[in-house]
Length: 374
Image (cartoon, rainbow, N blue to C red; front, side, top):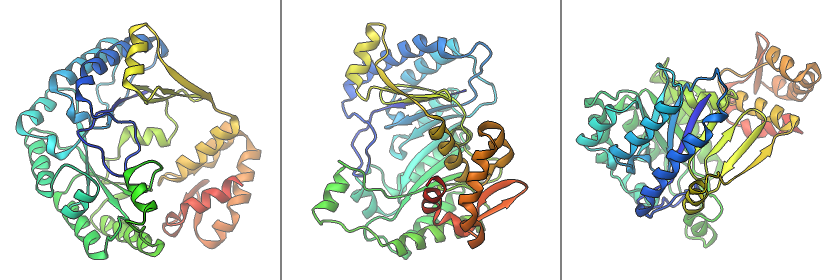
């Protein structure tokens, strides 16, 4: 079992983001108070023999919380939940939030991994995305975290930005590799409904990059990071050996997790629940001893499709023996029948009774998944 905590605060909203976030910093006090109550209220959801393996604070911008606020949260977790001593405990951070004092404060907490949203090393891109850090602050943050003893780090990039060129994307990869961090995530820009970026697209103020350019950027990323010794272990994630993100890997392999905070999701293998995406409603309900949330009971078909989709995105693939044990031989036979055209074309490969994407299949994985579920 793992824990995810959603910290919904942002100093300013990025133009592309559709996550639930809040810029009213005055709500932090009630948020932390509510979070501490939710952690206590939901202790009973943990099975008697279960242990919390990994903890992830995401957002939003968790690094906007003070060291004192983070201390309160961790003290509550460790008081109420049995936490594994060797687990991964990650905090998402913005580069400009990291100063020497804050880095040292983080090191005094149970946190042992930092995930930073860099998105680009081009100042024009950062301005376009409404990011609040500079290229120089990325280098400074990495140095300060390392000086404080926080070596386990992941940096995020976004590709497929309007106007992005082979030269600017290549420079982003070059700058990223120069920092020599153990983990890298890279995502294609998505135009989410209701975001400022999508409104710009609808008004004709920006133009999406072509599919050809997107493919080129992705190929450059895979080749450069592969040459530098990174495992491409999930569609959007790369890591040096033994530095895979353990909590996120748990998501892809179907591990259960408790999600705390407004808009956080939880999953117990059968039901996925969602906390209300509002700090005000979230805290008001908890003050009355209630948790305001909705849930959906997953059908067998939904669970099966999710099993195939998440595992096929990883380098470990779909273990057909395990699939048969869980879902029956008919489900496995159906999968292999639908996979046959992609096996013949070299987009999928079956070895040691494991179904995986080939390097060429990675580039068209969305289309393959659609075929497997039809």
